[in-house]
Image 1 (tube, helix red, strand yellow):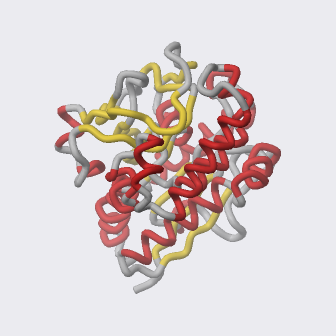
Image 2 (image 1 turned 60 degrees about the vertical axis):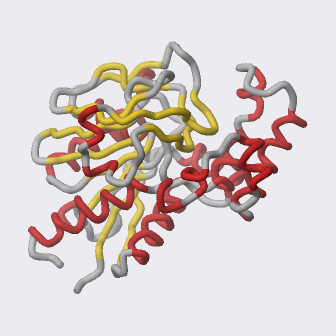
Length: 292
C-alpha cells in the first residue's frame, strides 16, 4: 500500500505564521501536519503530509506536485479576516475553489471552514456577538449533524477548543449546517460544491492545550481589552494552567478550575471530526481512485 498523501494549506501569511511559531513552537501548518501524521499512524496508515502556502505571493504547491497527487486537503486557522478582502485571503478562496474542482476530500478548522464557505458562495462577517475564545461551550449537533458521519462518536452537546471573532454569516448553496451554539450559528458544516465535498468546523479539533495556551498568551492584550481577563498576571495564570493540564491531563483540580470537560481532555474525542474525515472521506476516496 502506498503512503496516504495529504496536503495542509497554511492559512497565514509569513509574518503571522512566524509570530505564531514564536509563541507556540511551530507554525499552524506544521502543527496541523504533525497531528494528521499522528492520527494516520493511529489508524496504522503510512502517510506523507506536505504543506503549502496559498497566502504567499507567487506560492505554488510543493515542487513537482499538483492537487491530483493528493488524497485529501486540510486548511488551518488564520489571523486574517475574509470580510476585509485582503489579497492573502482572496488567494486562499481561489485555492479552495481549485480543491473543490479537483474533487478531493477537503477539511478545514475555523478559518478553513470560512474559506471553504466563501469559495462555494457563502459569506463571512465579524460575529456581532463577539469573540469566542479558549473553549467553545455547549456546541449542539443539529438534526442533520446527529446523523452526519463527520460527527460520529460525538454526544449531542459538547465543548471544544476555539478562538475566532468571525463567523459564516450566510451558508453557501450546497451547505448543510451540522452543529451550532449560542455564540456562533455555524459551528460545523458540510459543503458540497462542484466536484468536491468539504467537512469543516469553526472550532479546533487539532489543538492541544499547550498549543491553545501559546495562542492565548499572544492574545493577552486583546483578551484584556475585550474583558475576558483583567490583567497580564491573570492571563499568565490561565495559560500556565492550560499548559500544566496538557502535561498532566488527569489533574482534576486544573480541569475543574478551567471548566474543561472530560471529553475535551480525551484527544481521541477532541479530534473526532478529523479522525472521521480520514476514515470516512479520505480512505474511501483513495480506494475509489485505485490508489490504496
